[in-house]
Length: 329
Image (cartoon, rainbow, N blue to C red; front, top):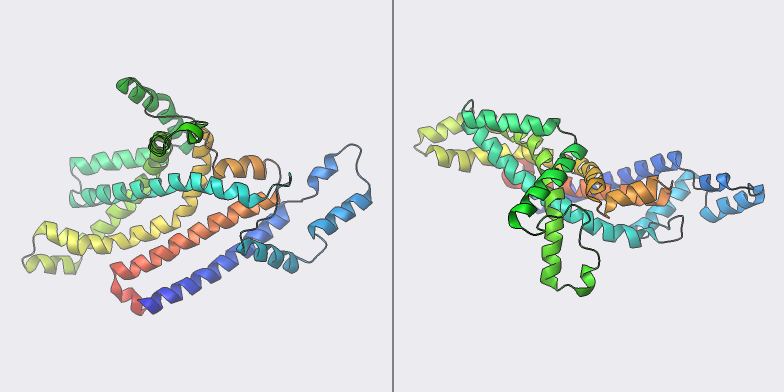
C-alpha cells in the first residue's frame, strides 16, 4: 500500500505539472496584459508599451515566462492584480469561503447518492425506485441558477416564516460585520445559516447524477456470481449487500466523484453569483474575466487544478482500499 501511494503521488505531481503548463499556455494566448492601456485617451506613446512589456517580462520567450510564473506559484506568489494587490492575499481567503460550500456539498451528495442508489437497485422497479428515478431526472434537467433561485425565493421564505425568525439566509456567506462583535458560536451559527441553501442547491443537483451511477453499479454487482455464492453459503441478504456488494459498487462512484470536482467548481461559480457569495466564483468573474486580469485567472485555474488532481489522488487510494487487487496492478 505504501509503494502504491508513492507511485500515485508521483503520477499526480506529473499531471499537475502538465495541467499548469496547459493553464499558462491557454491564458497567455487569451489575455493581453497591455490591452487596458490601448483604451486610454490619448493613446500612450510606443515607448510606454515597450517599457511595460519589459516590466512584465513579455519580451521573454514562452518557456522562460512559464517557469518564472511556476516558480513563483509554487511558493504561493501568483503575482499582482492590475490594481497592484497580491492575488494570493485575495484568492486564499475566498478559497476558504468556496471550499466550505464544496466540501459540504460533496459530503451530502455522496451520502444521498449511495443511499438512493442502493435502495433503487435493491428495490428495482418498485414504487420507491420509480420515485427516486423521477426525482433524479428532474434535478438533472434543472439549470443550476434556476434551481438556486427557487430555493432562495420559496424555500428560505417558507422556513423562516415557519420558525418565525431568520433561520436561512439568501445573501452573502455571513452577516456583514459579525466577525467584529459576534462570539465564536454566534459566528458559526450565522455562517451555517448562510451555508445551507447554497450547499443544498449544489448538493442536490450533483447527487442526482451520482445516484444513477451508484444504482447502475449496484445492479451490476447484485447480478454477479460471487453475490450468489455468498447467498448460497448462508449469508443473509442484507449482510451480502452491505458487506460484499456495496464495497465493490462504490468503486465506480469514487471515479465519478473524483472527476466531478471540476464540475462542482463550475457550479459553485453560478451558485455564488445567485447567493452573492464573495468566494472564488465571484473573484473569477469580477476581478479576473471582468477586468481581463491574467494573474487572477491563472491563480484561480491553478488552484482548481490542484483540487481536481488532489481528489483524483484520493480516489486512487480509495480504489486500493475498496479493492486490494488494484495495488498489484
